[in-house]
Length: 136
Image 1 (tube, rainbow, N blue to C red):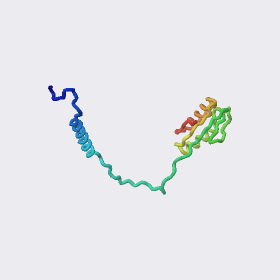
Image 2 (cartoon, rainbow, N blue to C red):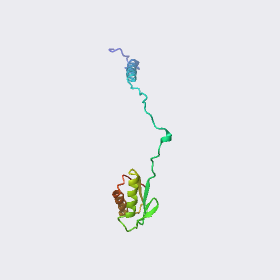
Image 3 (cartoon, one colour):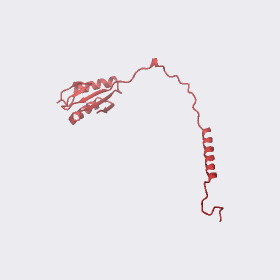
Image 4 (cartoon, rainbow, N blue to C red):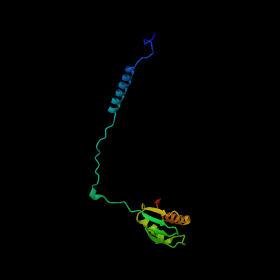
């Protein structure tokens, strides 16, 4: 019986190797905890709530209906046949001049004519709208 095992080959639970692994892990975590960088307080003065200015603007919504009517914040602009959309373009240009980061949301109906949606996109591009999204 070489190796000191029992006759049936069962060596039992070896706890010494598990303890060795646990001590190595404990040592590793103790060493790493000592190397952590502690954050220090920065001497930065943050403006108070009284000085806060609200910069959040309500997004402009452009809706395109089934019959091709475009609405600027629920008020119709331009005729259905006018592809250049001068009134919408003028409103968008004035909006971008007042606030270059103003967000514009285009919300076409499911059955809106694709060409009309493209016309609205062209007007937004001509007005240099930077923050443009599509909504459902």
